[in-house]
Length: 130
Image (cartoon, rainbow, N blue to C red; front, side, top):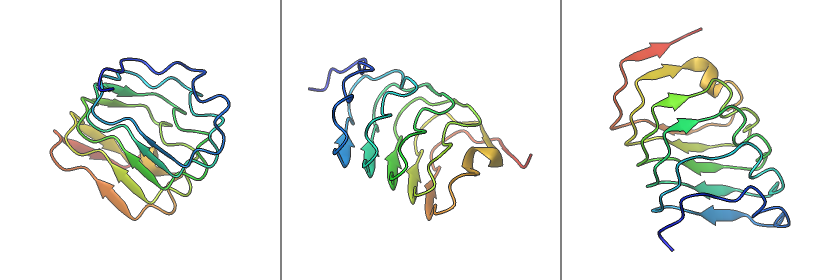
């Protein structure tokens, strides 16, 4: 379905073996903290083409094996400092076509294996090194 607005916080509770989730082209507006906490083997998460506006601290914290995170084609304008905390294995982070104006280096502190960071088609005005 292309009409998902909200992901119930318990929907993945018993789904620890899932390796890929594709929720692109829906109407998801928010990712609640700990929604993915039990999916420890998840490698690919595609949330592109949704209605996300803000990334909250620790939204993806328990996804210790995640290698690809696609958040492109949303309306993200706010990224909290610890949004990507714990994603040490992440290799590809796509934030293309959002409304991001500020990039802070602390967003990426845990991303020690990041190979590709896609930021094109945003409204970036400031890159801060704090």
